[in-house]
Length: 148
Length: 72
Image (cartoon, rainbow over all chains, first blue to last red; front, side, top):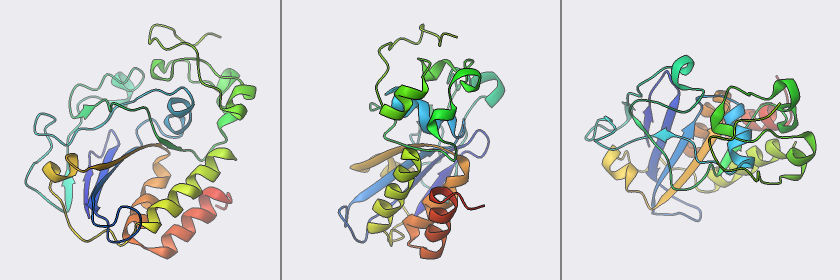
């Protein structure tokens, strides 16, 4: 398996050829974005939003010939670029929304005062009810900042 | 709880296709992979994801206990 990691900010991808299971024999890459933490494990999924992932291409600046533990560089900082996903290099936006989210906090805690209102990428503010029921957000524009 | 169940399902799904250290692809191969999965979330789960891919059962079990059962 090769691992591609940016360090800080925290973007990763793991790739290999599956040796068993439904993808047996197929080249498989799993992108894991930890930048943003538990929040990006909840709100992009329920809001059906595609957020940036590590760009493995030459254009993205990732070493193309290296294997094993490969370091790729993502431009920007959590403080300056994290809130609106405006990383300056080394990332791309997948054509699909976040497919799986992992959080060590219950999704329903991200409401009220705990909703990350400074994070525009998550779009609509959620309530305890819809976080429990998994309803999708009706607003789809980045200009629709979460309301208080 | 739903998200924790999802985490458990991810661990199970990944481990079902485990022993993935068959090759060490370059970035060129990795980005051309026909199977791509996009995950986001807690940085604490990174090690567990990698362990599941490598078929490291004890790490996967720790992940299950830590993430799914809420053990410290």
